[in-house]
Amino acid sequence: MITLGLDPHPGSHTVAALDEQGTPLASLTVPNTAEGLAQLHHFAHPYSCRQWAIEGAANRFITTFVSELLANNEAVTHSANLDESIPCSKRSQEE
View 1 (cartoon, rainbow, N blue to C red):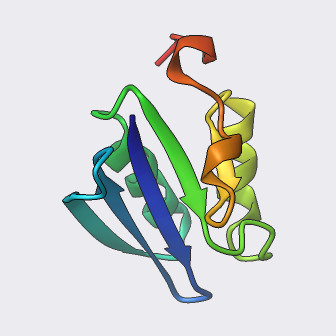
View 2 (spheres, one colour; view 1 turned 90 degrees about the vertical axis):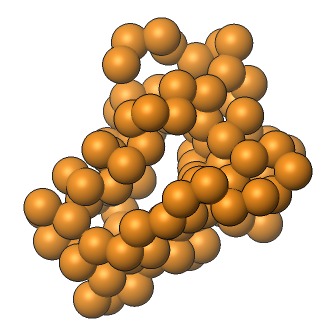
């Protein structure tokens, strides 16, 4: 499973894709705009078996994105609780 670690900030968001050993695969920084949030979805698309680890997932400047992930049955957790995410086999295969 790929972990997409997201570090959201008021002005920009940085995401890094990590394999199961924690090896960085790719990263991206986007502005905190509608276009930037769309880029985060696009970045994640190639990683079909993924979980999101979001620092401060309840922060007001990332709640729209988190709501979109949850609406799409994405595995989302606060970065301190990775063990609580949903296994890929139980997620919707609609992508």
